[in-house]
Image 1 (cartoon, rainbow, N blue to C red):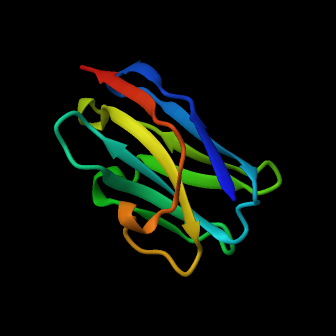
Image 2: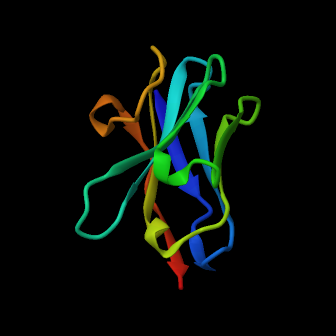
Image 3: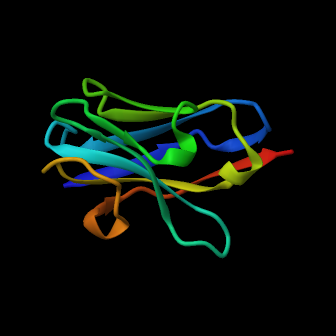
Length: 125
C-alpha cells in the first residue's frame, strides 16, 4: 500500500517559486502514476500534473504548462512539483495522489486511490 506525505507549500510573492515534494512510504513508485491536484476555496479539485512511475511520461494542465515541472526520484520514492512564475490564481491546497499506472491522461481525482495530506500554497500579488 502507498502512503503519501506532501510538503513544501508556503507563502510566496507572485513570480516566485516553490518546490513541492510527495514522499511515499511503503510501495515504490515504479508501478504507480503520481499526480498533483489542487483545490482552491469554493472550487472543485483540479488535476495539475501527473507522472508515470514506470516510464516518466508527464502531463500538465494547460494553465501550468511552461511554469510547473513534475519529476520523480524513484530511488527516494519522491515526486516533486517545481512551480515557477507563480500567480495568485495558483493559490490552493495542493495534494499528491497515486494510482496504478495504466497510462496517463488528465488526472481525474476519482481514479486515484491513495492521497497525501494537503499542503497550502499561497501566492500574494
